[in-house]
Image (tube, one colour):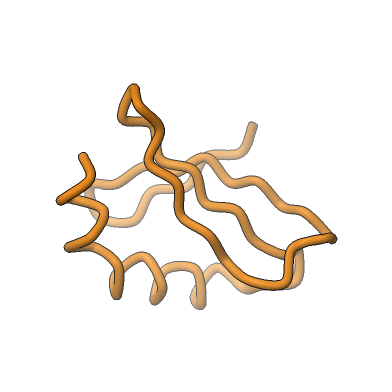
Length: 60
């Protein structure tokens, strides 16, 4: 499994060619999952995570 960290948040990356959008999941155990189409660049994923940072912390 590939892991990427933005600031103090660490995500497991799941690429799927069937996905059309980027999705963030907060598992019950606090694990963060970032699901995206394979062609989305890391810079775009980082921007999405930063935009959703408040939501992510509220779920944790």
